[in-house]
Length: 325
Image (cartoon, rainbow, N blue to C red; front, top):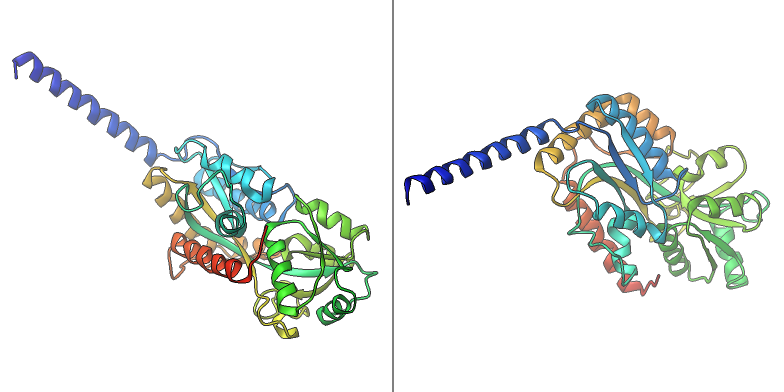
């Protein structure tokens, strides 16, 4: 190697070191500009409302605006695709849901993203029991009433299904109770709820977060929650298991995630900040107020491992029961 080539090589190494130091500095300084959080749901949905509560906390603690961006459509696939294709710089986060990161892979042949390879779940934010509710004029006072009506006249009880998770609950309910209901699917939560509130459809399956205010206001009547037992989110409402359907247990969840390839410093800072937030009593109170049970600040397993376990669990159930999209 000549003197000049050695000088050129040393100069290249110096530039590479400077670039690495600059990149490291930029990552340590994250966030230095606003961050968007894509949610795979509509404005006003339970996930959107809870994500706004979280965004306020992140903005306060990290000194930059965290902006919630709704990307509804195709059972959560539109939002997931947008997040998966975003730059891997830490300025686009994704609020993963049970549908987008766990169920869809087993229900649709074309996702447009890979739930396992395209995302790295960082921290669970909250858990949401599902609920079976009816219009106040409906004749059903309990889940047993609904089941008996469906057995007497199969496929005549219409049920609004505004999400992938509600469709899964619908299928499990039919199999557990050995009944045939009539599915009325919607692409957005608001449309399904509005049709039931208007009395056009008698029954709704949705999240507690999306329906609790309507139930408390007397515009919907709750028949059952799908948590293992009754929940403090809706006192006095029995679980499906407590009403004779122990197999009807479905709890939805949200997990703040980053697109795979985001710098590790960003993930680490987000993880540490989420731990602080979930220890905050005021945040936990706000989350409960919008119908979410806050996650633990010190979970037993990493979020990515839990999401993979959920994906395997629901994949087996969907396959074993022959559930179709």
